[in-house]
Length: 207
Image (tube, rainbow, N blue to C red):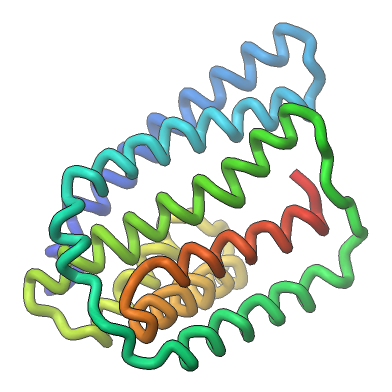
């Protein structure tokens, strides 16, 4: 079964998440002890989690870079990929309109979190889910449809949603990026739309 073939990546992500969250918690405690304030402490913890987790994920992707390159195919329909991405951004923009507008904080801690969320996260997550894992499943002979659904499901689960609504949100997000990957033939557009979506969210609700 496809999820058995995903066992190694799943275990890897679980270990990385536990280590990253633990180190992030310690960083938060350290920054709180330095009396930098709760906001800076929270941001420091968040950046620490991102640095640890994304460094490990990026290392895994670089080790398997050749299979990722080989899994890149000619675009099936760039129009379909752009349409899916555009519709997803419109939906996200509409979803945040009811929330109070925060704007961008130009403090160092906020900039670090923004870079982590809008640049590092989209690149590394797409490399891992729509690059490494996609190539791994293709190499084991699974069809594009099953690979698309599986990567979307695991992407949603990896974000550890604590309720069904949040899980559905991440699942729709993962499915959108996987479909963009499928139609565009590569991970360039998924990275772009992932980054744009994250920027829309943090610009309205802050970091």
